[in-house]
Image 1: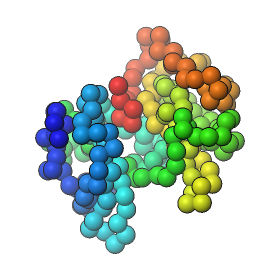
Image 2: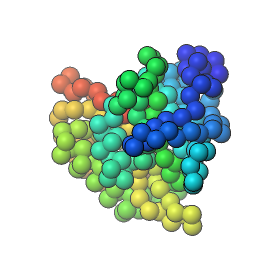
Image 3: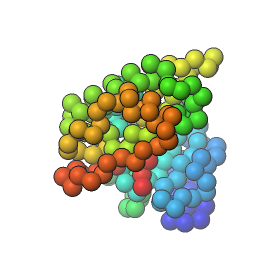
Image 4: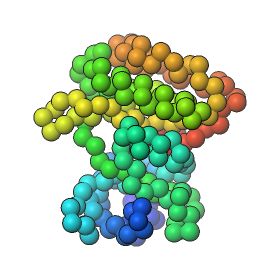
Length: 210
């Protein structure tokens, strides 16, 4: 695996769960190519030393803020956060990258979702996520179709939405009218977020680091 991320492989094959138990896994394939110009690597993996093996997503990112991810994970509005190395600094030896482990969800990126406008359940979940973040003085930084995953059950029925993006602390006005914005971008292309406010501090979730 070329590039600065390559040295993390094949040496990291485990993470710890909330009870500090060691969870081992095997890599299955790269999802972001062998390396990324953004300095992050995304891989599909599968746990191996547990009674019920499960597939997971393993990311190595240069920036990450666990606060919004953990908040939305508890509300089941993002993929489950299984491990965040920023919360285990004594156990982590990678000075330039963090390891983030998430549960794998089944669905399709909203950019590739055929129905337009999206189902009401998707818009409701986006609303819930924004309201939860706003209640903690966090703003969804980059609300675009590529950052919303339409979650589906095995029969292909839509069960909700999961979000992949970055967040900022500060003013919240531009993030309003969310149902209209998501529906409109479905028809009119992707609008760039308003990043002009200088009083916002970036909280990089690591799901869409730039």
